[in-house]
Length: 356
Length: 281
Image (cartoon, rainbow over all chains, first blue to last red; front, side, top):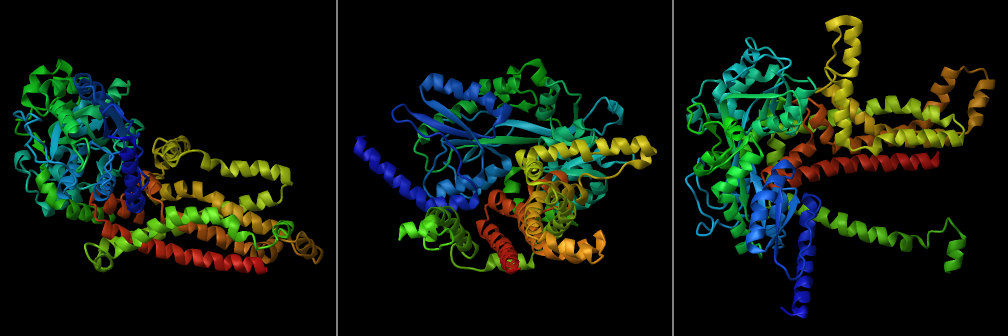
């Protein structure tokens, strides 16, 4: 490409940026993504930051760069509104992004992602179903976090029915301030078979939530608070993720995790629609599908598990000991397709319920 | 002539030139996006008022609107109650000492709102300093619930609203002629009477200005209620965030933003009206 043409393109994209800038500004500040250097090819990956992003930067992304010579620029600040603004204004800055299941269904529904090319990305026998535009690459799971210095194991709720039983297991509870995951555990608490949760019986879930509401000290908005509030002795039993507890333990905090009915949730990667680096991004996605990469990721971050069944035997003893058995009758999965159709209504109802 | 304009500081002829850069910036980064927000509030694949209609019928929206005003109003009143004595004290200090103390008033601006909210756990929490002291004095019965309820929200918000009250109140206190107080004293009025009949009424424009500013600011707050508040402390900004980022329903998000903006605009109109009054006095 000649310098002149490049310059013209730059001008054009500037103009597009101005046109779209307003709608971007309407949803928040611009995402700060390092600019593309001319010459060597590179792609921009946006994640949630923190220990998880450090791990896949060192594993999947580093291996990809080693094999292909394509640099991966890491950015953080995944945001569905920013993705929509980029796709709408055809000024796509991100080539690949990680997404929670809630974001993944939103991005799929709005058609903001490229379809996964399964001739490049190898699908393996997995504990999660295959999807058209997003790829699940690791799981994490919810249970109860508590401080073993304050409670012996027999005083800690293990099933969700225990968690709901404030008489038998006295203690201040912490739940999340959102419908997803809360409706599932409310139904399990009410005796619904963990393998038959979906389609969720919303009315029954809210009736069950009514029972626990008086015993909840805080409906937590920020995930780090699920640990910090137990640590500072503001709550006793917190709905938390295994990986977060493992991380707290690694920092020397007195924290334990128990879950007789683990609720398994996945994290996804996807490729924004209209990226100029679709092929390179698809190639990078194939590294996230490799069982050995998923196992290395699970070993680096105990409390996070692989999707591919072939990765499970490759896990270290510690990682395996923290992994729930996916086929156990008490293990529940979040069904993304149900949430895709019901997320907005269920969440509005949940917020109204909180106010009531 | 330029030199003549510069010579007269009160002149307005150079005003457009001085204001041009900031106006251009505001048009670009504030007014244009605002037009988009207005546009999106009535456009969803075609012009429609459905977002406003469904919001008017939404129990959730109306309750959150009520909560937002409730929280904003209580936080403002609390800030005025705490901020006024500070301003009064500052107004009686020699200028050099006052400047030093004003830096202390501005201290809350030096740390991020997130860090401050976490610091409040240490003070207000169940295991916080206040409750530990109370338990030491009164035993287990002495525990107060100061966190994850409205108390926590109001304390957290007052912490950053107080400077917005102190400055306008201080300005109107300093603008008062000290001879008035002396005259009242000579006529036999005691300190309480002087305060109630002279100082307080003359400082009202400052109180109203500071109060309205706090109201407008607190209507848009949502981090503090989310971190320090209880389950029912949901603000309008939380709803906008939900519609913008979770459901990508920008039509409804924009409609809420327009409603919040209109309400804030009414408050700002009141503010400028009070300010004009202040100028006359």
